[in-house]
Image 1: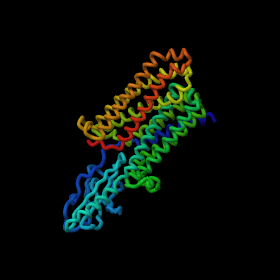
Image 2: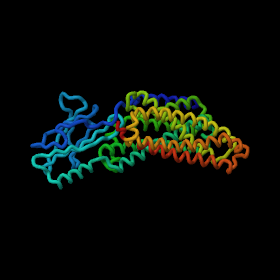
Image 3: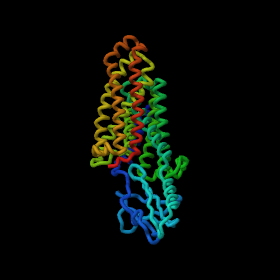
Image 4: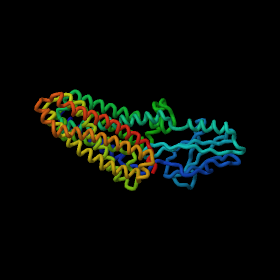
Length: 446
């Protein structure tokens, strides 16, 4: 029985490494955009064409391109003969009131972002203003639902938070506080993080399907939405992340059953490290880290960025929720200085990797100032500055007041200022995660 328990984490590590290898290729393109169409958008034609030809700025898969009438009827999409993979052909429908409109959308095969637009042609005599307005309204309805997009952002925010709490919490318990594996609050926090991570991943698959098909929230529950997403590269990354969350249940179960001795076990640590790296990598694969001249460096910087954030945020929440309320002098003396050092290293890694990612994705000062993506980055940096101010007060307390708190056996009045600064730091970190979720869905606009 003991041998089986020792082999179980190693099996988890092997499976996690296999999953990372399956989906380990980095993305290599920005959002897919339409370059031109034939006939040209807005052209006046003597008669309705049998088909339209669309050319994009990068290769597209036929399954990732959708075309429909303003009424929502799907139009066939094929590949023209003797053309490259960045071109598709769309069969047209019948014109209405002298106007032919086609609503198109394409899903980036790498990061799952949807781009869409409308092509309108005047056929024969000019269409009436009323008819043109009706078609414009119908076409506007055939676009990604803002409600679905907000739900997708919320699911990603929950996923980032769960990832940070789970990985950072495991690292906190393993490196700084092995006894935490046997305390109820720490165990509950790790379990809640695991549940949220798995649920947010599953929900993201359905919401992604509804988002790219211009559907509503109900469409996120349809099996067809899941099937459609899971046949794409972003869907494979999401599926791998879901499987890694399942493997994470094995790691978590071994920790909860074995307690502090399990957290010190080399076999368990190998399994936990493999699952953690797999979760971080599959999460980073759906971001913008590979957009730029050096995608490999972008992938490395993204991994370092996510790892640093997880260690900092997860440890911070574990400290706030599980350690400080106990006010045990021995724990404070052992855990708080160790976390302070870990947080300092993590913040430095976040800063360096963040600068690399920002330059990799944005590419210029002009884009930083005049694109929505760059402005969100500035907001994230400003909030992060507030977090660092709160962290500074926390570190000052550790340097000047921790010894006194230990001597006074965790006196509430002495520890309270540290609790306030840590709570403020935690709240601002949640805002940073929210901005990060918006960045994932924003177009860098290079």
